[in-house]
Length: 191
Image (spheres, rainbow, N blue to C red):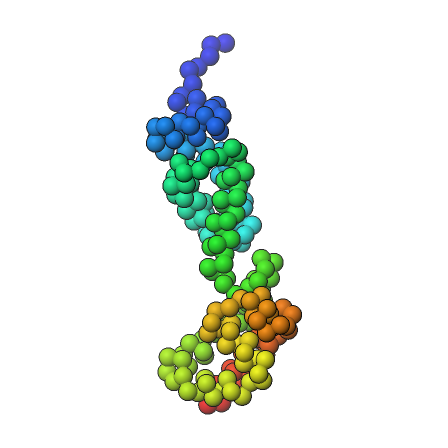
């Protein structure tokens, strides 16, 4: 049986991670880094999907991570590309998740935000139209509800930060925010 010559891409796929990294660093040719990244793209996508919970966001993150990779590889001493890439992907996705979710304190409880997001509208409208009604309604809340709501919505603190500031457990902070928001909604609807 006669052996077919390897195509350039096939030959590149046979090179080790280290040799592809070195080729990229010395030549600056992004094809070498692209070949290396393609090996681990399923892993990167899996990490992104696990954290972001949305295939579209995960695909966008895979592309953004490659762009970050192009910038960061020349400046870092990388002993294990796979491990380094995993950490880079995880950190990128966690930052993206935090930007989108901002308020939840753990990755396993994004459903806690559904209630809050569903009634966000009255606050935004009220602030834009007349902040006085909102201020009056805030004064009607209990001290702990008012403080939790103000820290959460106006100072954009996380549940964990609020719990530390008011020295309450996380569940109590969530409850104060939920009850405070419900009371504010009722108050604003009556005005």
